[in-house]
Image (cartoon, rainbow over all chains, first blue to last red; front, side):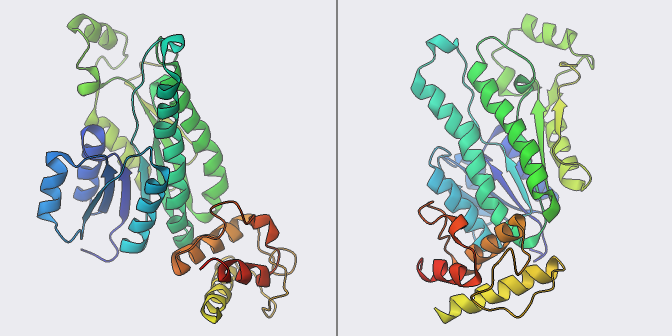
Length: 244
Length: 83
């Protein structure tokens, strides 16, 4: 491990897009810290390959437990001395007509998709402010900018992340810290597995680039935002033009 | 809590140097903003460094408002009381 290797904290990195982000940052030479409620086979394999946690660190954390989220970030700062990159990826889907959505489900979605990300950012910023550098990337959604039946609560949490991104970018930019968001549209993953072939074809027909984005497209966009110091407070919509 | 005071004084000097602030001689009665010239984001950075160095954030619970901290001595007392 290089002592100068950048440290990336990625929430929810045990599967899907989060796992792909972790793999990409490891491949780029970063030290990666991530958490999820349970490890899964992929995390277990990674931990077995790196038992001392030199380059990969995982803890079991439920994102709704805000004290545990804060503690995780501080553990990473103490263990590796800094956090260079934070990707607020962990989140939950919530779908249903608003009047038929239980209030406890609304509260859980707000906590996991929004409050948990804010608390994780607040704690991670301690390391970034100390070092006067850092990059924060919030994973929003195209639903933050486009209306969609049954997604009002989900959209609210993801739109809030964009507001959070813009204001925080102004706040911490003078200390060398960038804050951006990406807003993925439909992308080829288990998220769209439930769609029928006809639904999938309709989405592709309405997409100017005539294809669903891939996880690799999203990972590349995050990599680009990490690589640049000239973009902050922005949201990149990664949807093949679906929303334009 | 002499150790705390040393860490706090060193941190104030470090942040001032990074921000190109010319500090007068430090003492407990000096005002962080009016006399030392720190701005709110500088103070946020000072608190971040102190939390990492001292492993405590006396302002996390909200019971001790950061707005009560006006002088270097107030800052030292906050950490001395939090350990």
